[in-house]
Length: 356
Ligand SMILES: Cc1ncc(COP(=O)(O)O)c(C=O)c1O
Image: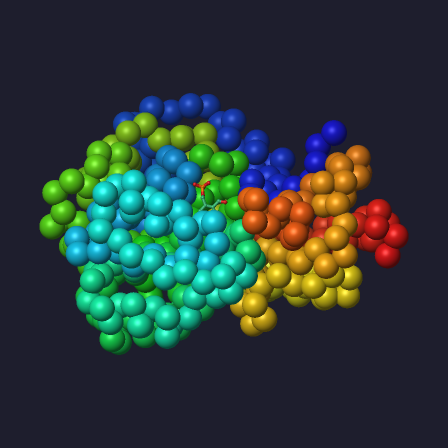
């Protein structure tokens, strides 16, 4: 039996979106590939409300994270750790031998402009990495406020934002940042396998001054192919998923982005009020995510058993992330193409299982 996915990725994919992948194959150097690539990039600019360059990568979002630090860090990168995914930025910087430092808060807490200011003041950094929506803790960081402070006080520091579990589900003013990235298997509600990002001109200028940008991870090569070959990519892209993305972007534009953000925030509100009635919220108050609610398991229920019972009824939620949060929290994602009626159905089913 298919389990409807209330996990924070991969998310439910509608049958008609899945079907859009089955169009006949084309050659990746044919004019049809240029048309498809260009169409996707132009629609993404509309969806993200930007004139910045958009780049689509055949990889999951982690690849863009790695590419963006490789293409920008010279002096040092400041990482802002508040959970498992923000920690990934730091691990990547180390794995690439890049000079790096980190500030770290207790899981469940948010990163604030003051914390970032205090560390950037050391003068050790030319790149700052942020995580908009920390999927392991359900914290949505105040990235706009952080960016405003950085632009004013440290204008040469580039700002890279992991928005893997929020972009297209919550409004992000991408023009405030140098890179904002996401993967297709979260709020975009496609199968995994593609990721995309916005990129600023000054990021591309910085990249020109960096000798070893990697091969698959080279932003400048990606940009060159878009410009010179009309929306193509240096390596063979996942054309089947491009077709589904093109189709899904039309659906998003038809829904309207404001409506889409409102639908996400209404589902978040509903989930939070249910959680407060029966359990508690895990994130620090005021920083709760609009796309995934992390619930503190104050009643000590077995989350594994709850998920087994849900599976028998055709649904799945997510246990807490990793050793630290498993069974102590559980996560309900309300992202992508889920509707309020899906959330209502899930919460009513949990109530029935737990005898609320
Ligand atoms: C906030 C965040 N960043 C990064 C990732 C990694 O993304 P991907 O699996 O697409 O590489 C995830 C995946 O869950 C995530 O939630």
